[in-house]
Length: 129
Image 1 (cartoon, one colour):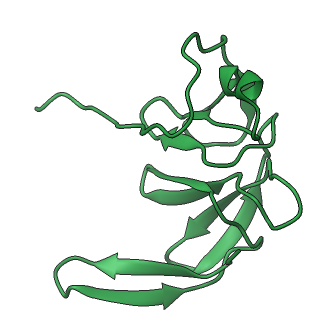
Image 2 (tube, rainbow, N blue to C red; image 1 turned 30 degrees about the horizontal axis):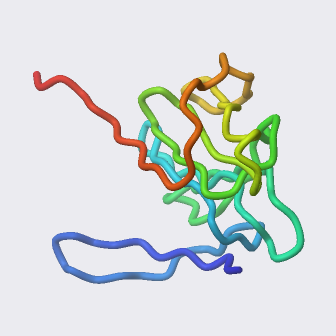
Image 3 (cartoon, rainbow, N blue to C red; image 1 turned 180 degrees about the vertical axis):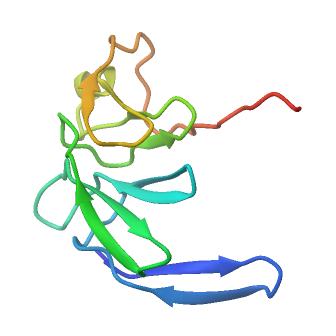
């Protein structure tokens, strides 16, 4: 369970430590929305998390934002749809998906996900142009 975060510079092929997250987490989901990094959910060693944090690269600081409606670990997160999927150890919880506005100021529960599966990947697809 870590709060440490590193940033990768592709051009220099170098990893650099940045400010630690506010909460220690493992199995957190992460996505970049409009140039801002978000860490969602996870597990802190004793409980699953619903908390969401955003990283401000200019200030090198993490800020707490509105939590998700459900605690999740291993969430898949995509910035285009701003949807999260994942949950505690029970497959029953995997039916729940969370949606948030692009600015991630609030969350709401989306319609149920028909496919129930653990260990998946979320990919953002954008049309060229």
